[in-house]
Image 1 (cartoon, rainbow, N blue to C red):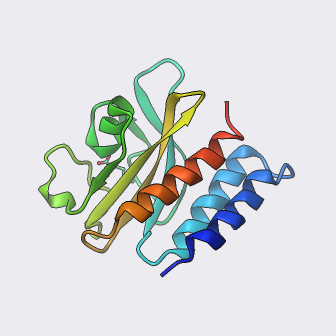
Image 2 (image 1 turned 30 degrees about the vertical axis):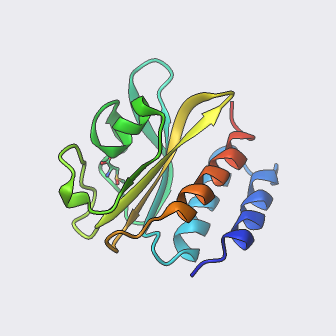
Length: 153
Ligand code: SME
C-alpha cells in the first residue's frame, strides 16, 4: 500500500520545482503516482478547452489512449466536467456512459480540479483491479489537485 503522506511531500517538491514547465511537472506527478501506487494503472490530467466544451489530455502515465479529447457529458470524465463532483466507478462494465480506454480497466476515479472555485480540469485514474478506490483515494486526489491548482491559472 502506498504511503500517501510520503507521496504528498514528493508532489509538493514537484509542484515547487520552477526549473520545470507546468506540463513537465504534471507529467512527473502522473509518473510518480502511476509507479508508486499499485492500483493506479493509468493516471492522467485532462483540462477544459478555453472555448469548446471539451476536455483535452495534457499529461499522463501508462498506456497511450486514443481519447485525448472528450466532449463534456461523454464518459466518466465528461460527466465530471459538468457535475463538478468526484466520480468513483467500482465496476466500469456497469456504466452506460463510459469510454473504454483499455479492456484491462476494471474501475476508475475522476476528481475535478478547481482554480478559484472554477472546475478547470480533472485527474483521472484507471485501475485494472475491480473496486480499487475508496474515500482515502478521493481525499488524497483532492489534495493532489489542490497542490496542482497552485501552479495553474
Ligand atoms: N474512461 C474515461 C475515458 C478516459 S480513459 O480512462 C483514459 C471515461 O469514461 O471518461
